[in-house]
Amino acid sequence: MWDNAPLLRNIANALFACSVFAVLSGAVYYAVHLPGLFPLQSVRLDTAPQRVEVLQVLQTVRNDVQGNFFTVDIERLRQSLEKLPWVRSVSIRREFPQRLAVQLEEHQALARWNNSELVNRQGEVFVADSEQILPGFIGQAGDASEVTQRYAEFSQQLATLDLQVTQLALSPRHAWQLRLNNGTVLELGREDMQQRLARFVAVQQSAGKFSAKYVDLRYRNGFAVRLTADDRKQRAEG
Image (tube, rainbow, N blue to C red; front, side):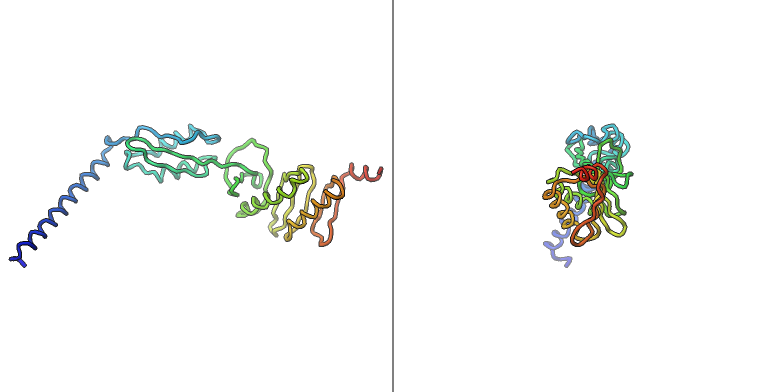
């Protein structure tokens, strides 16, 4: 092998190329880690937040952004921003040579969860302060997504009567109860909920609306009604 000149030249060239690559890689690594090189000058929000406090965002950025354009820990910053109230998700990208672009997705509150938290339109529970007038959802841990889905279905059925759900409760035994904006409480039970609610809507449409305090729809061929005092009086006079 030692008298094979072409082979020795190829080996030498390969070793030289590896040495040059190692030197260049080390130089680049050293350069990008220099604090004064490629410093971050600004962070840009893609859209102005509606509920997230801008000052909280800026404070989080000041606390978490360390290093330069190349070495800043974007994942750490993203996780910190997602802990802020009303922030659902965050995406961050580098804009060469000196800026980060941050896009915030905010929670859209749909209801209150167990009178202590909020539920967004995706059925996710989150913690934030809100003065909005919202329906109340009641359920066990992990039920929020299902309650959100049922809320949409029941609301669509009741829309023909111009009624809205103000409270939707799912019991530990998986039974459903609705409270409407006219004060009526509907017991739907654990099965055939949409069919039972459809029966209630059909009777209201055909027989004329009645002001019921409580309607138990868990019967197979009908339902039990507890009328309000005003409705009982009107029917007695009629």
